[in-house]
Amino acid sequence: MFKNFVLILIGIIALSLIGVVFLFKGAQRDKEYIPLEGSITPENILKIKGVGFKREAWSEYKIEGYGVKIEGGTTTQKIGKLLVKLISLSIQGEEHIGIELDGKEESGIESFTFALLLHPEKNETIYLMKIKGAPIVCSKQLPATISGLPYEEFSRKNLENEYSVDTSEWNFVSKEKITLESGKQIEVYKFRRETIFEGNKIINELWLSGEVPTYLVMNSETIDKTKRSITLTNFGMDGGLPNFTKDDLKACESEIPGLPSELQKMACNSDEDCACGVDKQTGKCAYGNKIFIDTSKQCPDFCTGIAGNLRIKCVNNVCMLVPV
Image (tube, rainbow, N blue to C red; front, side, top):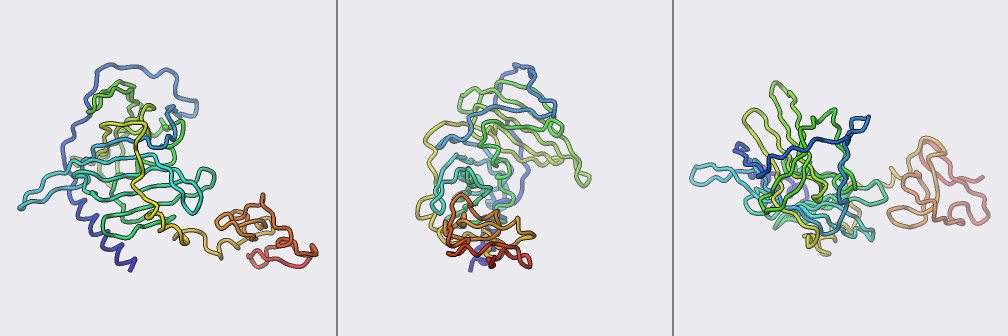
């Protein structure tokens, strides 16, 4: 049944993404140019200080080139809206922070909500996705059905206190003050790069600001005469409540697809790979590969035996309790 849902959803998204040619109207801006003053480190990394993760902060974007309208045989581009929020949700009893994308008017992804959630301490990413009339997807694997949507601009680095740009990859253009459609004035760093792929010239432009949640002001890609972009129109620091509800999160109550299998948890190459304590996922006494075991919480009788005559060894690439 899940496979059928995925196929149906792929069809819905594919239909919404047909055609990407359009004209782009950028944010209105002043002509003031402010030179960069020693912000580039010796390693060619430019660091932009920002607000970091701030729960309920939000940014509204205009997205172009991600869908078309077909009416009576006439095709016109869709200029839609995307609402991006910084959210915090409890997944299996543990708090996760992340970024939620809500498709709005004429976006080509109306009624579509996608979230990337990160555990603040563990190297763990969970993806949530829902579309009107379809089951909630909760997975540790990026859903293939979001291919072509403007999600690639958002990741863990958008939540950090600094945003790093590799200036050996991106050419710094200028640091300017611009005025958004909402009338707010912000200072932005502008970058540009040109590449050739399969004989096509690709031009990418990236605008960032430390005053904006997620930093992103504009990201565009032009391949020959085809262009698509996501451009900031407004933002705020509160009121961006998650679109995912407690009922939606029930999709994550069972074992999340993509989480390590029991076999993976027990795999090893040497005795040093094995540990005993509690399972990081379940909180129960367990032994296995140290990646999945919290050794700060010990279960003495379980790990060593009541008589202290057991220890954990890697036997045939599996962590096992064996007699001393």
